[in-house]
Length: 169
View 1 (cartoon, one colour):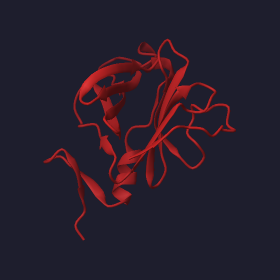
View 2: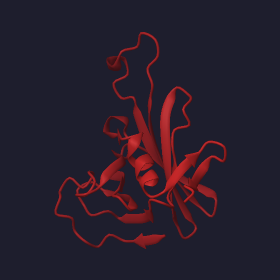
View 3: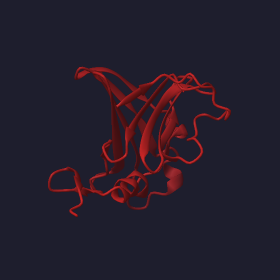
View 4: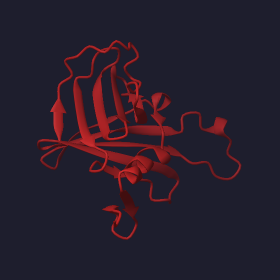
């Protein structure tokens, strides 16, 4: 796992978006804060970036897609939610994102901010903090993104083992 302090200034003032050539897993602004969170990926690497909106990230972590701990939606429940976990020494950053599904006669307008997300930080297995996204800022691209990227690198989700496994040759 690489740990990188972002010392490079980005030329893109809207840093809450992913960088050129990357797709978003989830981006948001932290509730009641000037901080933003984004998890993006390209065809080989998954990136965690956290920091003040409009400034370079204060913390950047990266993990190869083939080994990143990505937990897809299990297919049940009122919410569709997924997670990606990044490790940095004895710190764990569990990013979660999802949205509430509609049932019955509900209309999209009945739930204007259905999306949710955030990050749970642990140190040595001890819960340190949970930062929750402002619901109206959550952009969550569930489904094909990381799932397909992992498949393209030769790993598939096993519902039997609840983990990613390599495809046989």
